[in-house]
Image (cartoon, rainbow over all chains, first blue to last red):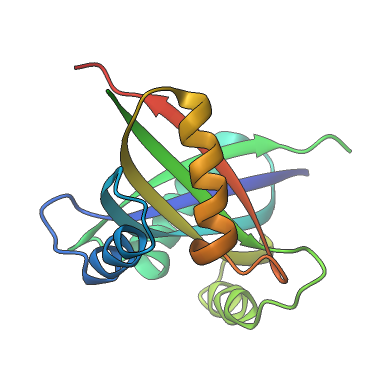
Length: 86
Length: 86
């Protein structure tokens, strides 16, 4: 059994409006950061997973994302898997 | 003036309790994903920035993180800057 660090980036699909991002953008512009033209906010999920192989981990984490961690109707996700050295 | 894609990962410091992560962990375990041992939730912020150089961008974005985008008392942040091809 190996241990893996899994990093999942959950982002709204580009066509979906992001009111939280718009608010952050406005706040940054108001603070004087006029160089910022767009802001979008997503989620970062970090899991520690014990499993036999990275392929297994990817398959299972993909399932977790579809079922629980993201809303596939409006969000995309990226999965990054790193094996931990014991 | 160049355009940069900036990706900021905001994570709770390791010593700070993460109740949202604990809830996600419990939900995953309840769904049958017993291989997941830990879960932590952070924020992912993506900015589009127009500026002269990547060094400038890093300095300004670092400031934005300290002032608005993160809570430096309980959170760490990582900044990743990529120049966009026109």
